[in-house]
Image: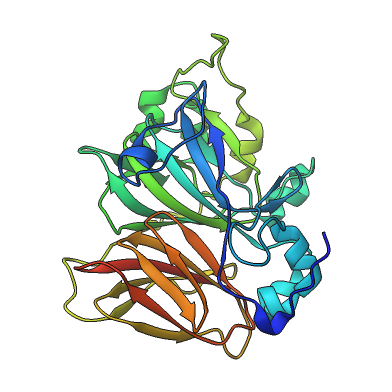
Length: 338
């Protein structure tokens, strides 16, 4: 596609979601976010809100660049779009998803760089963060090993879902809680969770147990026990939970969620009025994800409106912008940068 828009006229970019059917998918995207989902046979479990991968590329939904793919924009604008830190990759470095878990996801792990080198086969490292948008009563998150889970005990329990679950840290889901899932962390999202996921641009997952579930063909899904065991970081026993803000704020506040990660930085913005921000000095783009209430983002005539669940990309060269709440009460926006 011929891209003729000058970089100085770039604006907040929205993208068409790419919906993925998953055997464990749920109904919270429509019930909580009010989304009109496409016709589907299996439940919708994921919405890829922003992605730049072979075979799956986000397409711009608004403004003069509507119809362009994210990959085309990265290739054409480079640092003007992704910022100086984003030019280390030929593709957009992050992937943003909504996860709608009607059932518990498989117990799985993503490899780190060392495990990828050892395993080969095109494996890509993946660290991710989950932010709980909504949850049903009793919903839980399983993430991280507890002190009893030695390598030998875990391997011996791979075929026993009850024993496996007892070796994991377990958390009750709550709006605004986040979970930092470093590569090498064994994890499973429990049923009844609607989650915003920020992750490295990778799709490598090793499933070590599927809780006895079978696919639409009546057969168990493929497991990757050996790759999974070689990917688990058994030295990491820290809690992945990052407690959310207690109660509502009376004025604008910014809370750090993920700060020391080499792949992305995440903040929780609790807003009561207009919030001023900037991408200067151009090190990184900003991703803004509306979580609670509507917002208008941008400046002058280069603006976009987000409803809960939507994510927009503020180009690295954009500079000063505002986030303006559109509804009464506290507004929540998740901000992600490199």
